[in-house]
Amino acid sequence: MHQVVLIRHGQSVWNLENRFTGWTDVDLTEQGLMEARRAGGLLKANGFTFDVAYTSVLRRAIRTMWIVLHEMELTWIPEYKSWMLNERHYGALQGLNKAETAAKYGEEQVQLWRRSVQVRPPAMDESDERYAGSDPRYKHLAKSDIPLTESLEDTERRALIYWHDNVAPAIWSGQRVLIAAHGNTLRAMVKYLDRIPGDGIAGLDIPTGVPLVYELDDDLNAIRHYYLGAE
Ligand SMILES: O=C(O)[C@@H](CO)OP(=O)(O)O
Image (cartoon, rainbow, N blue to C red; front, side, top):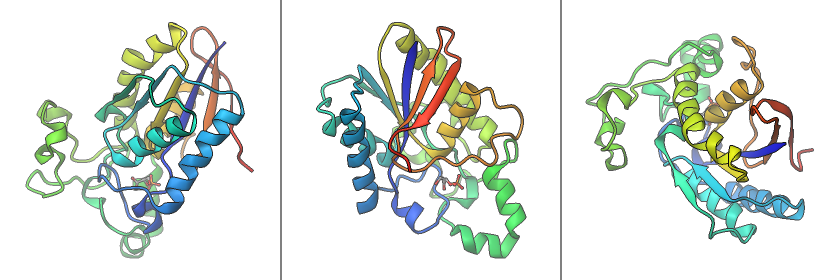
């Protein structure tokens, strides 16, 4: 049996302010830092350990991974960062308040943007100062890979390329893997691991800073999953 532990970053400043975040690089709040410390402590107390860790290029996930590894006395293990594990790109909605946007466009429309598998939020313009193409961390990307908006399905496509190219081989080689990522990247992985068809994932939200343990068979099909230390 194989095992992989997924963790969504701790509460971020924009989680707290209820703003669409996506690729915006906001930091953790005090509560988020505490959630990450608690997660690391819980993993250690429950006998977990890791050989390798993966995260996005966004500081809320990176910092969560670092804190978890620090608490576990595992800061020495190899860690890899990739834009492919970034949060779903929220297009032109990035930065807007979710409640104000719902008041303007209606709850139903905002729910579609947030939780539909295929619907993309309104796209950002390339001339927008928030455009990721002007951020040095994405300068090595092909222009066609730099999103202007993404559906959950788009996010799933890139996250699974990363899974198949990097994570699955590590698991198969016997390494114990930690992935610190984001609400929608992890929803996309859960959708894949649990083979949830269509819009079946719509009602699933992943809490911040709680380790989600997946036990996998030799073909990396999920056998069971559980949250560690969740009430
Ligand atoms: O704003 C975001 O990027 C995400 C995660 O916080 O929000 P949502 O819950 O709408 O997917």
